[in-house]
Length: 341
Image 1: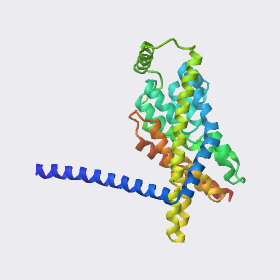
Image 2: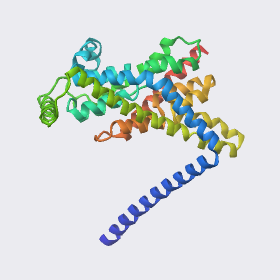
Image 3: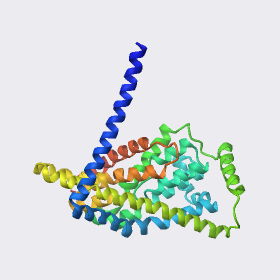
């Protein structure tokens, strides 16, 4: 019996690895063939991702990456979060480092919420439970991107306030619900001695590392923040270009499928990469755009995975939370469109 169980486990493991490798090989082979066989549409989609990243994401995200990095390195992030403490603390009962994640995640937008959460977790400023909680609802589309890029595709008959209420009220209420029921007793609302000790230890190790004479603190923080921001924004651009390129797969697939299947092209493109998907959806599918914005698309999931790399934060749990928020957004916007139309 024992030998049979061992054989079954080994065979199951081998079969799982074989299927995974075969699926990966098939995907790479098909994608490479499509790019070589249809270079013009492939180039067009890749160029769309590049232009969207260059014209929309860099201006809206890179300044916030630099500013948030400087606040962390200069040690003023908690003081900045303190400005919002009277508004946020009564709802979430969190220490200032956690409130800083909420502020940056909602004001600066995706993927800053994931990046700041992971950075503070690596620095020992927040615990694993706090990081998991914050990641669940703080990684959203930024208001600058929403107002400048998304809003023109939405019906003007609905006041902007109601769009913003759904886009940011839904994740905020979702976070409150998690804090009230799921993380009611596992997260402290003040700085614990253990967390402060870990943070001080990390600072001491950094200070004791051998190095040459450094520039003043402000210049040093600015230089490190620019370098870190460039690395993150470049990685973001790579994801956008690659996942935009993958949109050529459903486009060609739908040309060989029955005409009725073409209605799936818009949700597939939105699911693949949200920015180009919005442009493809246009003004004809506003409800679909708003619902997929809460989720972010596969590209956003991959970018979030890159931001939390090196930590034990779960991308699967994050994806589940985003799906839940998308369902709530569908209910809210569905009722909103029913009222106005």
